[in-house]
Length: 133
Length: 173
Image 1 (tube, rainbow over the protein chains, first blue to last red):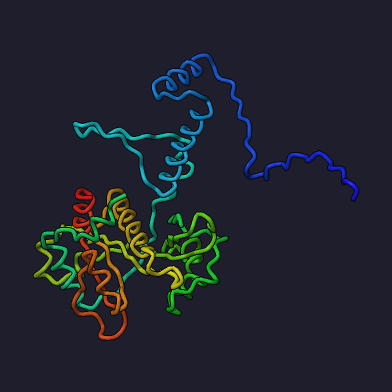
Image 2: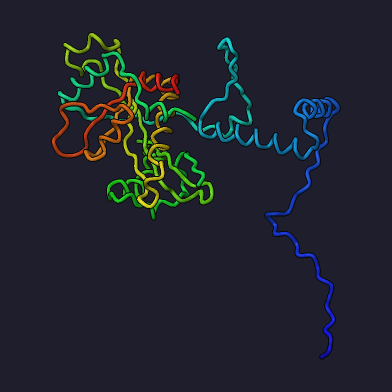
């Protein structure tokens, strides 16, 4: 039985989606100091970890603004500051809802007036749950 | 499944949507986009899976409305603000039957409440009106919707939820 000679295996290239891409940025000295400072504060050892966290935070902010939510920080005193970033505003949807005419029966209007003029009912558990998150 | 709720977009796949109710299917397939972009009658929000972001799993449609103060019976206007009563209409809400029982309805109505609050903060709104099929009233009642009296005996029931109740819920959430 003859021996087959084996060709050395070529390394299988990673599929495109799994390939890691390099990211290089030119930072002004002040920005560089800021990045280093943040890395120290956040105890991040590598630029990769720093970028990964920064992207996750930015992705979240873009997602919230896309859904039309505004982003605030709140102090213990209740004082609020809104994050306003022109780039984020590009993804925010228009808030405006169109206006329609609803036809009502006289009894419906009476019932609506009764309900709307009363003190509001306390929220149900399901409604509270709906407002979470 | 990571669900995202956003405004309906033109390339969204609506043709295969099936909630088991032809008028609700038909609205999404034939009218929702036109009503949103051209006629400005209602804005439709769709639930999609982030893994297949064009396939619509559920939707709801919102619009604003108001009732002129003069339209209310005189004996009831005293407790109301001295203006027309601004409302948000939750015109339709439906979930594809293949995805029912996964909490999509809850996710959709949660989003509708949050949008209603934003609109209320921006332009004012006193309550949310929903036209619900009679067999779905209990589902809406769980969120605090109350049926208005005097609806036609056939057809959907008209429900009301005070926006102040929604605001209280947000504080307690």
